[in-house]
Image (tube, rainbow, N blue to C red; front, side, top):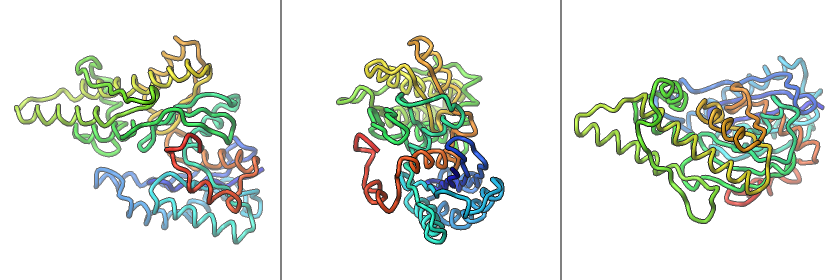
Length: 338
């Protein structure tokens, strides 16, 4: 089985060909990071225009690298949501055009399902059911992975995502976009106990997150120091921010695992590349007797391989755009499943 996966939810245009679910024949990513650095974050209109320019050469290179043609494919998978609407439309419409022209089935893939599937590529022995923390610039979710295509959200952020908190506190500290990696590097030289930052709790669900108060606390700390002519030790603040976010993500995930009876835990999404999050999760899993799976750094960010892999499982389960895309598109992350 050969599935082409196309990803365009934010600022990476990506495509990949997966063979038999987890064997990645090609994985091509065109990043826009350098351009968006000029503005301190992703500009949706620019991202959409670059996807229009990049999607054809990226898909063609993915096919060439995999040494296959469109005729060889069994199906075409594409990220349909969530993400920047203009960016998503580029990938979806391109994939729809390919499917129509070739007569291949079109398979819609939820972006979070893609991130979860990244672990299958690196760890084929990982099998549902298990609990997965999905954390990135736009998402912070604790997900029950019931099967390869069935999911239930048990915890989520009420406001900002963990990755957003990393990036915005980094920007306040003077780091360029994307800031998360700069906080990670600076934290290696800092004292994580230097600043005692808030660890918000929310009513109604012990597994839900809130990061807006943490972000505001860091911004206010820096602003107040500036008004007084004081200098804040950047490495110490970076280490404290990283420790706080890592502890929040880890504590809520491990509590959910304990309450729901899971001994297998995975981490996915861009924030899973953060060394503080990885080490905190590893320590907590060891203490609680759980087995931990994390993707390699190359599969933490947005990529086509994860969409091709998730699309393969969806294809095998009979998911097709002509039968389910409308239903999928109306689903919200406010609902318990996706």
